[in-house]
Image 1 (cartoon, rainbow, N blue to C red):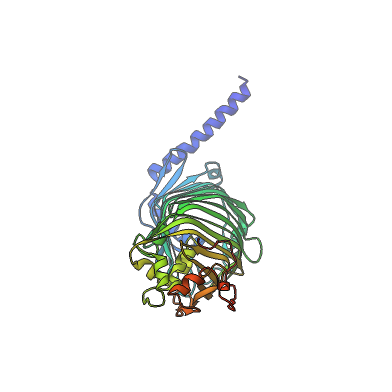
Image 2 (image 1 turned 60 degrees about the vertical axis):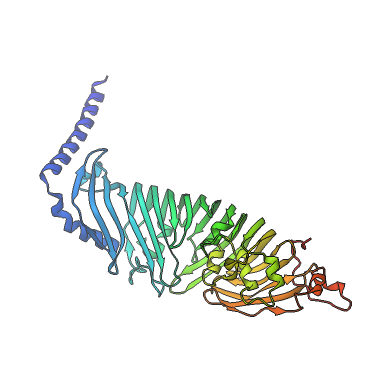
Amino acid sequence: MPRSFKIILCAVGGFFALLVCVAVAVFYFVDLNAYKPGLEAAATRALGMEVRVGGRLGIAFSPGLHVTLADIHLHNRGADFASAKEARLGIDLLPLLHKEVRVGKIDLKQPRISVERDREGRFNFEKQEAAGRRFPGLDLSKVSLSDLTLVYADKKSGVAFEAGDCSLDLHQLQLASGKIADLMKNLSLTAEFACGEVRTKDFVAATDLKVSVAGSSGVFELKPVVLRVFGGQGSGTMRADFAGAVPQYQVRFALAQFNIEEFLKTLSPEKVAHGSMDFSANLLIQGKTAKRPTWSADGEASLRGANLILNNMDLDQMLSRIESSQNFNLIDVGALFFAGPLGLVVTKGYNFASIFRGSGGHSEIRLLVSNWKVEQGVARALDVAMATDENRIALQGELDFVNERFNDVTMAVIDAEGCAMVKQQIHGPFQKPVVEKPNFLISLTGPAFNLLKEGWNLLPGVNCEVFYTGSVPPSQ
């Protein structure tokens, strides 16, 4: 081995040995906890939130040099925004020679992040001066969060969920210094995120969630996104673009063979139905959320199922007695049209009562189709209908997701020609809509009803305005 190479090798070895000796000396002779108040103050200034370290500080050497902090809490507006049982900061050795402390890796154990949105639309991590405040740059090779818990609560809408058994691994995280408003434009990373379970107050919304993320310069790709929802397998992609003045999200999602019984549990614990359905959506969503949501969506959403069974309910018998029944609303059957992820927004306010009350017997829904066109955040029914053994029920109208309203949604029992024999309308806010009384265009009892189900045109001189021309064929 050349002598010069040996000298270089010994010098490098001695250099690292010297660094280790210095670190050991610091470990044994310097009380790091004396610096804790200064560390808390510096972190508070950098983050704009109150930072407290409840436990001790320490130094470890395996692997590499890193500082550990125990029991960390971030406060904002008088409440915990985030906490962690332990944080381990990996320190790059070479910059120490220049009296520079550079963190290369961060490992958080049992972190908990609680995001809350108040009735005025403000998040608990926001600061009044946040728009003009600048954030420092970051360059981290790896950030790892294990046993992560995420909690979200919106006091205005009532939406809340908790995600547990989560993990997040970030690689090559780079953030250029700049204004808070430009944070997403200045961010670059790749990441893998996973959660064992996402739960609301009343039910498990999703399990086995896995997402891969990559992006820079304000454009991020989330693909694939996989999860299980209502017992079905969901998959999709999302492209989030923050480069322009208005954020845009291109979302493609499909949920195959989800269980209608699991979905209806979000409305009632009763076992109302069983069977499988397929859901898909392709949406371009754009806009911002401030004190008042200003967003829109364009695209399509579709729901389809066959051979669904309604338990403890003979729908055909109930329809034949709808004129005299005081307990049955035709609108309640619309809960089946709104099944699936988007339907949670629609069904959360209105109490779809009679479909859960039951009257004995059962019904088979041979085919259900629910196709919607979405424009500017308003979903318009294109082909929405179902067929039982004896009847067809169809829907027209719009669902305004921006303002959370039913726009003159009408349910109707239709004959073989697609003409309405009875109609019922719902309109107003999702949370508290107005349900009109059924409008009987013809009596549904007696021989005349059986004849009319074959078609209005069988009666001389009788014409009707066609209500439905979609893909669900008449009952046999």
